[in-house]
Length: 462
Image 1 (spheres, rainbow, N blue to C red):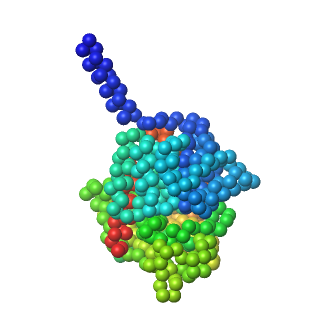
Image 2 (image 1 turned 135 degrees about the vertical axis):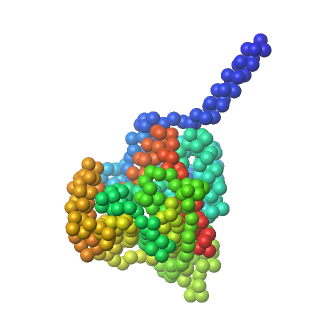
Image 3 (image 1 turned 180 degrees about the horizontal axis):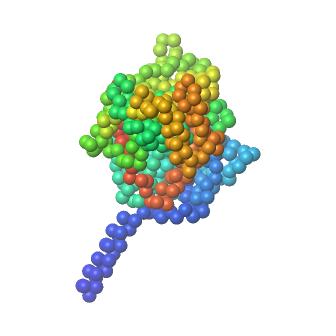
């Protein structure tokens, strides 16, 4: 009898142990098996994933938020996608509002994926609580805005791994076609040569991104919440937009190869960093936020003329695997000539690959190939033709034209997508990860490394 009881106890313990190792829910890619719960939507990225329907996602979704205009904007924009003339969506939102929105979501737990895009001050707490309760997480960037939060992010990811949960952030810029082609061409030695190491003064890779507070998104003026201008809630630019830039730099330099901030061989180091402010008048603030007065929590950032100084600009130089890189993210009030601008260069021994997005390019990202002094100038055009031909299996129709900025790579319109469309790509990639039960090792490692870099740069800039 004792032997039978011991055997039963052993089987029970074994099954219990195995249950802890197994994912809480297995995804197969079946229709409607993913159920979304959006918590405290305060950023327009929260509704952009709803621009389309997805086979794997149940159209009945859930929103938990405090009362106020932010949740109303979110639900209104999702409703507008349902009513659009072309490819209308079929979302049905169940909305709960109240101060206990997070506890209510965790208690009811009607979904299996939490979407979070809003006030960055609270984001890591939402992520950690969701993982503790067995919920997968699709988070807008940045996941954290201070280095003090880095241990909690690390702990959240480790806990997710233990439970077989997927936690990832929305890296939309990976799907920008000029960034994709810039990466691919940089790994064709006949054209590019080798990636230079660069220096702090002239980094091998540079990415500069200029954004504007007042602009149009998805066909309507973008209204930002007042807290967006409080760096203690939103975070400074150096830890926000720069997340995309660091992510792209690592991915382009060493594609799908994990770069670990803890590994001495990877040599991850922030070399220098600085930040500075953008000024906003009361009228400009009201236009952007629909709020007639500055809230008290940003009063310390006002000067004697009631002009708001937002720490919205930052740049830093960092190094990994002996390669120097610079990331810069800047914000202005608005651009009277058009939209956001972007500049990126990857320096090779035979060619530089440069992306310009400015007035000259009609604010469309455009890729140029610039031969260096070490290039085979006489045969460079033929070498470029061969490089483009080697990509024709994936990207047919690529062409070139000589300009003052170098060889412009002409990309067929079918490969060009808007920033809004990239959110569909990110969501579908996340759905694939749910079926796989994990994100790739390189992506999991680089996720921690990029937040290590951005938050360390923030500390240095202080």
